[in-house]
Amino acid sequence: MSSKLKNVFSILVMGLLVVSCVSDKDFKEKVKKAIEENPEIVIDAISKKPHEFVQVLQKAVNETRMVEEKKAREDEQKKLEAHFNNPLAPQIGETESIRGEKDAPITLVMFSDFQCPYCVQGVNTVNKLREKYGRKIRYVYKHLPLVSLGHAQAPLAAEYFEAIAMQSVEKAYKFHDELYSNQRNIQNGETFFKAVVKKLNIDANKLSADLKSERVKKKMENDQMEAQKFEFQGTPGFLLNGIPIYGAYPIEYFESIIGRLKQSGKLII
Image 1 (cartoon, helix red, strand yellow):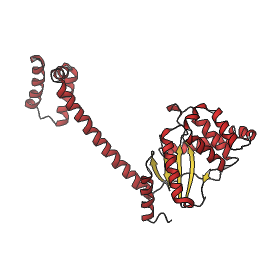
Image 2 (cartoon, rainbow, N blue to C red):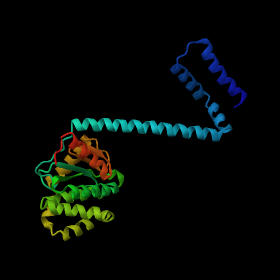
Image 3 (cartoon, one colour):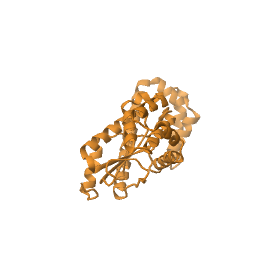
Image 4 (tube, rainbow, N blue to C red):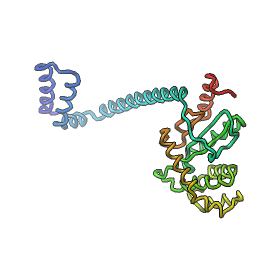
């Protein structure tokens, strides 16, 4: 650091300490102002010891990240505790496509995007849970297509699912399975969707009309509004008996929630 810059900084610090009772906050503000007005102080110091500067910066970044991650975990845990006491209530009406027994004690709702790679992991977890719990679990698929992420065919895939469900919920979930098993083909859009539909022996004329129906349009709107209400900003998002799960967590995480619900007497299976 040049002698001129050293003098500027030294005079500033000593002047503040000698002539006034300066609070820590005021002191920091005045030092900040001095640096803003004389940025060469910092630049000169960095140029003299760049290696040390990078080390200090990396340490500060790592410490800040750790603090933020800890706070995020604590906030998430607080939210989780709150939801155990006041679970969220998704809309599951007569027009909802339910896979499994309608009166099953475990309800797993998934907000998803057919083109989301993480949703493939989510569906795999759903399948494992369905295999383990059988008739004790029901699965409800809802739509949150993320076109902003480049998933251009996701909305149409969702519309096809709902239109097929108007003929057969069972076939709608077979369509669902086929798309998640061959996710890369979704980029081919309607060509791929029609090929899947053909294998499912769906009435093509009715399907074409249902795709344009108010019911399908309204279902898409309602699902996305509900996702926003439950603060699902990405996919997949789940509700396990009203407990939100934000992301493609492994099956062990779902099992821990089921265990907690059983322990508290809120789930009897």
